[in-house]
Length: 371
Image (tube, rainbow, N blue to C red; front, side):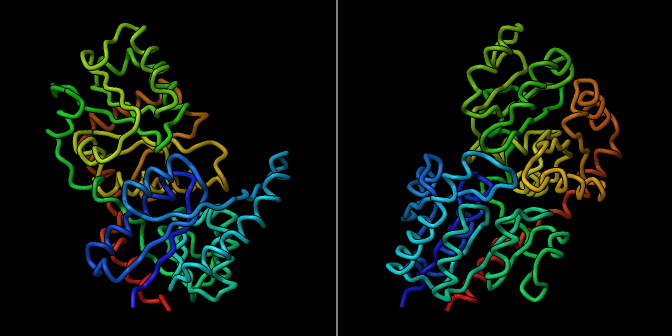
């Protein structure tokens, strides 16, 4: 008899890619013909594309966001929440899985609650050092809670939790520097390469700083800049208006990085990135020195706390947004590049935040609790 696994989550790449990594691992290692998957989550262009590309059936539900502040959207969310719950009850009844694997966040809430009603086992995964409201709430009904940061243990029942790490997709590991250069049509010269990452949707403040300081950057570095699809044309034009022809002036903009990520990380000498858990795990897997720029005011301040967990371990340089000014950015880039001991310390210490067996550990836990 086939086992059935429901995947719950959505909204960002950080919530979707770990689900996808688990699916790929189970398909490759656990007799694909004996396991069925179903994704239940919000309808979105990103979610649709990811699930279709990987042949994962999906059912869409309404998802209301748990907010820590007053907003007129709160009224709409209050309507969406019960609708999403009853939609989840129906989809779970039709599919009746053996286990639900939830990546957390507001998109997981109706699915996990419906699974709890049916007494379906639930494995919840928390990526960040401090869990959001949704995961703190869902942790009470989950069968198991898998964590990425030890610090997050204080928020959950210790008998339910275990440290698993964060699954890192294969196309973020073991890249090839030459393949990265081919992707960018780059000829690597004597200047080191700086890779700016803004997450799956780009980061406006990082984009603005790159434009602001591009003259100084180009003097010392080759710049690979992941902009995000929404701002790609605007930011690219602004850089070109400063006199830097794309692909010919040591400036290489990219709208979205997919399976090329490992190659670009292999190519990079230093990375500047947001402090999302997925980005941290991918950079750690490649042992790259990094400057982290946590989002100011992220939910539960999770990016700042993620970043300072690395800072305490001397595994990253952290610049909060109020200190993310051209002079400071250039100072730390130059210090990392010129001080070999400092660079090696960052590269060595960040390895502690990568769990190479995370995917296997989580997959086996999911299958173990499947009823």
